[in-house]
Length: 448
Image (tube, rainbow, N blue to C red; front, side):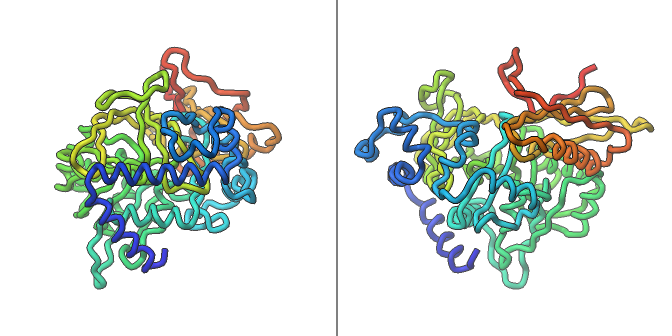
């Protein structure tokens, strides 16, 4: 990102943070209407969808968001080519890019590509234009990192997580402004001691990663194996439980900044400490909470989240259903807050080597799995030393099973368990929901 562009956006975002709640709501509503009018004329998918529901161009200025149909990840992926507003971009071309490129710094025609499975088990591909990605990066600096510029000392930023692919966290961190940060990426280690040694050498000022990984580091800091003094801890990608937070803050003597992010919109909100509410950035998002019948709930009532990122025009998501549940609260502060929050939590799989030593595979090693044409996937530990990967693919992707077998083997190798754990890929028509819970699980642990 050009420095002058970043600085101008930083100033704007900081000024927006000083608006009162009513002004923020008015701004959000204006941006929603502008997005809707843009999308109606530039996206065949939305034009057809809204026409089917009787919505005409003359209705767009006055329509209420709740009168628009809800969309979800499956609809976005099934209608990828007609939804994006650049007709030269197709799902096939983007999938070819993802299949051949794992460097998070590389771009698809100047556009940032993020791929993920999400908690529904339906793989998602999300595109951000150059302008949209610049806005996100500036929003993170202005409202999350809030660095103090020092030309004699760049902040040492350590990212912990999956680094070999186009994932949200590593892609965003890779784009951290170089005049502010000295960034180092730490991939998920086979042995936590490797990560500890690397951090002891790097001595980061900022740590950013999954809540579970930061929690493991807090345990190492408490017992003396880790010896660092970060000035900022940023958690995202997993639910930060109260026990995790207390352990981390006790070990590092620092509050944890809990970032609410997803691949559909990288910066939704933040909680800066356990003493503060969890604020959502509703100046750049239209936020709704609905019940099981898709009706809006009253303030303070828990329900499922719908989000409309108001800055996304290349691959617009209007009234997009997320799997998170929460309740919202408006107040005198600029941004709305949530009272309860439940994000994705996955199980860790545990395998035993011949010496009886436990080896864990964290869900982060599996939930970002990708192969061309992939519709659904699910990992199941079927015995103490075997791992089954079920995949469902679109028609015309005959090579997907072979690619999946190679990537499953890569997971076993990368986690150091390939010598005593066997992996198998099973091609299925579809993967259903759990008949008892009605939920989909990406990772199923072994049960004796």
